[in-house]
Image (cartoon, helix red, strand yellow):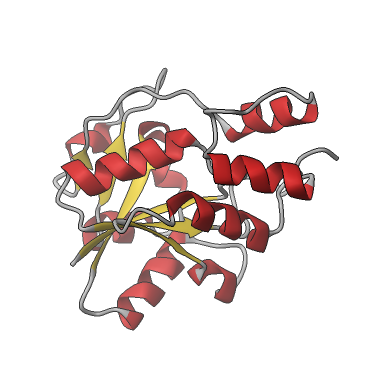
Length: 191
C-alpha cells in the first residue's frame, strides 16, 4: 500500500489542504493520504501555533468522512523539533508493508535541499509535488523520484484565515464547517 504523507502544522486545516489531499488520493497512485500534524516545524516559528492536540482534533473533524484521508499524531511521540526523515524512518519500521511518499507544495521543493537528510528522503521515499502560485521551478522537478501531480493553483493560507478570525470576519468556505464550529466554540486564534 502506498501512503502519501502530508506534513503540516494545519493551524488551522483549510479547504486548500483538503483539495490537495483528496486530489492526491484520488488521481495519483497513492492509496491513502495521512495528514501528519507537526508539533513544531524546525523551519517555522512557534508563535501563534495552537496546541498540537487542538490542531489534530480539527484535522480529524475535517477528514472523518473520507476513508482515503486519515490524520496521524506520529510526530507527537518523536523528539522535537520534528524532522521529516526521522518520521519516515520511524513509520517505515512500524509499517514495513507500506510505501511512504512525502507530499509537498512546489514552494517547498525549491527549499528542499535545506531539509535534514534531503537526499535520503528523495532516494528512499520520494516526493509527490503539487503546484503553488508564484513559485520558481526547481531542478528537482525532473528527478525520477519526484512525481508532479496536476492540481489547481490554490493560494489559501492559514495565516489569512487566522487574521480573518482575529478581525471577527467570516471564514465560511475557507475551512470545513466542523472546523469552523470548533474554532468558534473554543475561541481559537482570538488572542
